[in-house]
Image (tube, rainbow, N blue to C red; front, side, top):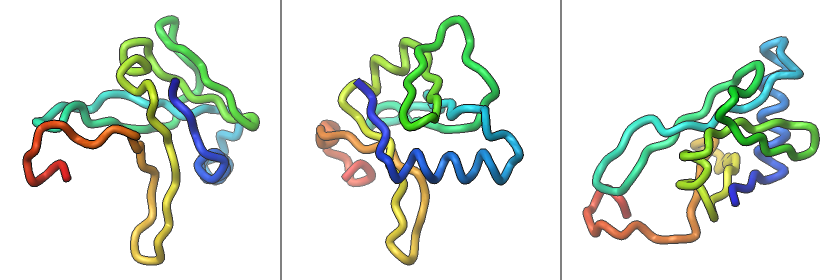
Length: 104
């Protein structure tokens, strides 16, 4: 199952409100692939498609198609702000399995 942290929920809600789209949701999708597996992207979207699963938390809707959701099983969406960098991340409890230097 894909989870989303409270911090990420609140940050997405801030973005939606700033865009004047408080009732929209967050779209999570596969945006490419490399030696370390798929790369994921996020965007805001008004409503889900027929192929989507909808995850709801604290009033936020997250739209993910079934294939992507299967690949995201056991992962978590979070928002990090370490003072120098900030942004949304999708983190896995599994380390990368390819062994290349760009994955680690």
